[in-house]
Length: 146
Image (cartoon, rainbow, N blue to C red; front, side):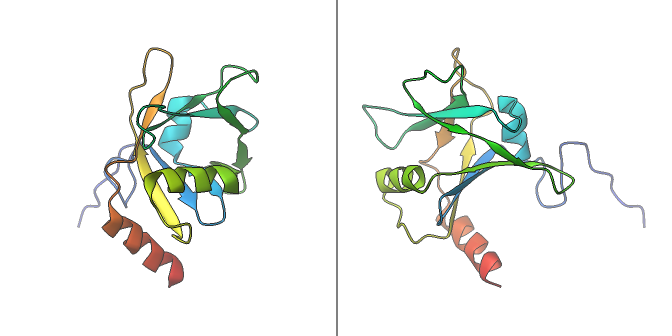
């Protein structure tokens, strides 16, 4: 039987891979490889988040333009111990603020959101918090517990 070859941006688990950001219970924030590439992130870069003042459930992300931003910004670290470096940082307070704004329990183990591939003119990508698929979150939790 001939094995189907995957394209460069595809994996066995998803066709194609998606731009996502994940928030863990302990405050770790992970970027998918696709999100890291879209934001052109590397270890030591900064990201910034913005919350819509009129709709507090709307969140946005972009690579920080500089360290004098009025928005919440964080230094991104890299895990280079595996084949695909993982971009991540830790901020329990920020994760709590996002979860609180969305009405998500603080004890939820892992929450994953999709991020829009296209950005605004000033580089903001929307974090799609309104389409949270709770069934997928529960599936991820079960995987982590097994």
